[in-house]
Image 1 (cartoon, rainbow, N blue to C red):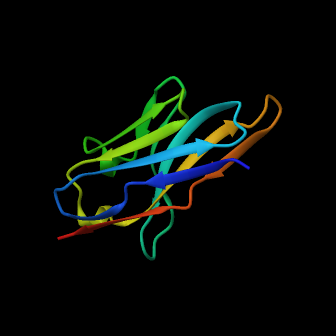
Image 2: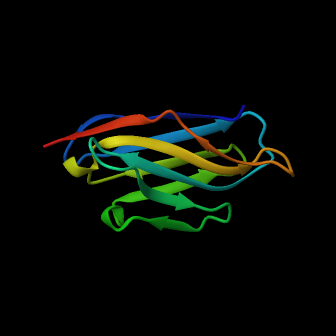
Length: 120
């Protein structure tokens, strides 16, 4: 019954910026790592960025220096600030949360995906 709701996708020109946001709701005891994945047409899903509950971050090389992942532990939200967007960033972006629904139940939750289109 955990749900992740995303917002912020849209159409932008190359060089522009977008900020994606994801809010988790439902039965959540604690969220461990959160992350953003993306899938471009005809390609496999790719891990873009992750962030732990302590704030440690990792990025795929292609977005380093351009994207920033952040989270608010109290509100169970994660955001992805995307700057200097390129046409190759065009994809459906998915929010992910590795969490404990209870002290004994671990699960992996996914958002529905939000489309980011970068035009040249």
